[in-house]
Length: 444
Ligand SMILES: Cc1cc2nc3c(=O)[nH]c(=O)nc-3n(C[C@H](O)[C@H](O)[C@H](O)COP(=O)(O)O)c2cc1C
Image 1 (tube, rainbow, N blue to C red):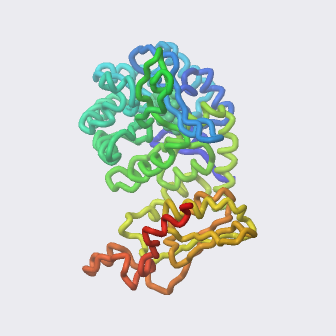
Image 2: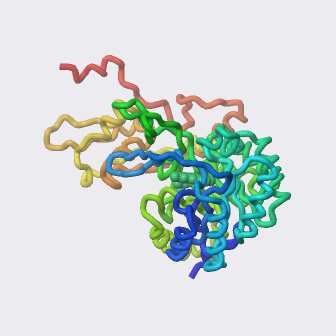
Image 3: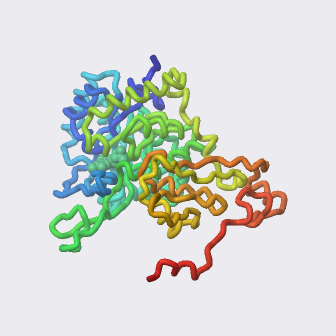
């Protein structure tokens, strides 16, 4: 049986599934219930100077039948007294000495940092996470993402913390920045033991069309909040990859956060360099029980692939994530429609003709509504397969054209910047674009 236990920058946990700092880690009651359900660690709801929260706090994007495809909040750090939280951290550690309890912290001055670090260490926290990510409320007071967006300030505070802390320190980064490597490098320079990302993305969920106030509405007003949940996973994966590939950052373990809901999501984060995982929205949606399937799925995956421990496959996808200029320009795929599976909705035709490359035609007969691929026009963009509502009905087939692989970089080195009309490229002579007047053929 593979071993799920991890040692993340010195923080030990029975498995890599940790609750991210947020409502599920508000109290000792919740954290103990979560550990009982199988979670390996918990990052406590951020502790700091006392604050007051507003009523009406969350908003969500319900995409068609999917509730909470994206989620947002305008909640601040914990509004519970520090002493209660410290007491409960102590209680949790008494009952679960082998689980990871990480205290998320956000304060302002050096003295406050030193004091709160002492407090949580005395309470028995196994590690500290620095919340430099919150994009609402706290940043207006010079904390949260206001620090995460200023590498020099971030480095300075990490430096203070590293001098004061005896337990491992994780720096949590904000995605609200143009280049995630900048705060990543600042965390490394400050001496952080590890990084975690992503915190939430600055967002407005929508506007109420009667009151003209943004959601979530607080007495007819609203404010930007932090976006998270399944919709943000691609952004989080990309940022994790950026840090995991960087030569001056990759020595720090990465805790991957953002839209994780299933064991598959977890594996993707690990393959891109994460060695622990944090989950918030999925727990708020489905409860602590989701960890059971996540653990079972991860174990099965590891068994199938022959991995004994998590570290066996951390970052294994990284060599395959390259720059565009290194992609093979001579690789070609074309769409194929399975006649048996096609339900004749012709969505692929509409999408391709209006939104892409005019490589699908509908045949004028009334017997069949199954469209046909015009191979010579198909650039292999995948759009038809993506819009098709039937699983595996449209697939992309590789066409081996017997042409040697070539990249943009190689051609540029040879002084030959490629164009669509290069004969030695699989793109060949470019696809046929209909004449403008043909657009009017459906006019009555
Ligand atoms: C309601 C809510 C409150 C949150 N509070 C905190 C917090 O106090 N500290 C923190 O570092 N992150 C906080 N987060 C961010 C999460 O820890 C996490 O980084 C983010 O939600 C992305 O993960 P997810 O997609 O699994 O939710 C909060 C998120 C939500 C939804």
